[in-house]
Image (cartoon, rainbow, N blue to C red):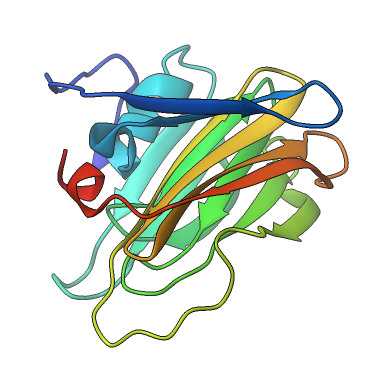
Length: 185
C-alpha cells in the first residue's frame, strides 16, 4: 500500500491533559489522545509536506508491517512496525517510539531520513518495570523542534517524558497513576 501525504482519515479526537513543572522549569504536560496512538495518525501529521514518500508493506495479516521511506524515488530508510507504531518528524529527523502494545516500556530512536543513519537510541524511564499477564501500552509522540515529547499510557500507569532532540538525553520525566478509562478514549 502506498501512502500519500494529504490523505486524511476523519477521526474524533479526545485529548486528556494533566501537567506539572519540572525542576528546570519545563512544563510536563501529559496530553493523551487514543487516536494519536496510530501509524495512520503519524503519517498524516508528520508527512503532509510531500518531501518523503511512505510505503507500508504487509505480506500476511499477522506479520509485522514494514514501513519504507523514499526521497526522489530512492529508499532512504525502512523499519518494522505495527498499526500502533508512532513517530514524529522535524525536518529530516525521524523520531520513532519503539514499543509493543502488549508489553510495558518504550524506547525512542532518532534517524536521519536523508541517510538512514541512527543518531541516538534512548530507553524511556516510563513507569518502570511491572509484572503483568494481560496488558495494554499505547504511546503518543510529538516534537517542538527542541524536545521529543512522549506521552505513555500503560495499563499500570501513565507518564510524560521529554528528550533532548539532538542527544536523546532525558530532560524531564513525570510518572502518573494509571487511568484505565483513558486507554479506551
